[in-house]
Length: 204
Image (cartoon, rainbow, N blue to C red; front, top):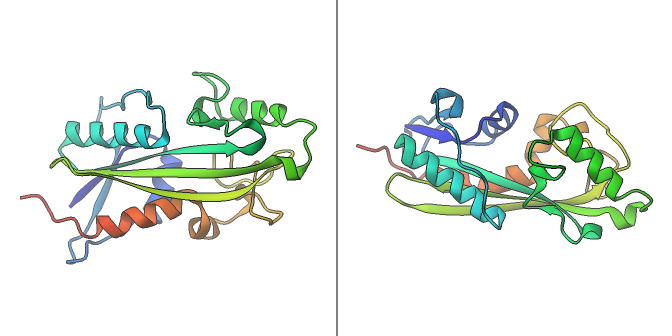
């Protein structure tokens, strides 16, 4: 059975492959494919007002276009001092065409002068599973921590080098892949989705 992970981000695809099941409950092998396997298929703009909206927009579109069950997600970094920003605009925090470094620099600038207690933040992921039959389900996972004062660590992507995990002194980018997949917001959301995924039946 094929499942489409609706992302063009190779880092995210690799991360999810380490979390998702390789077989359904009845023993049917699951093969995961990405957008790279469908030339010309691009996801619609993330125009939703919430993480849930964006995750659903992508998964439903991908499933309809390919005829496969599709899974997608949207993740928001919510910083208390910034009243929950960047939130749903996390990936585009520094502008529509900004890259990761642009986003990270803007976040550090916005928190300049704030001590660690004022830099509390949460990562929140909403994962969505959409099937060609019209079933749509969402699953949420979160991780609390703080925004550090600079880049640390070589692993992960996005805001990982800035995000101090819980009360620890390590960023997400300083964790090994195994350590991250045990606690991350994305892992927690997709572990819940995986419980539903193993119940899927192959299409006839």
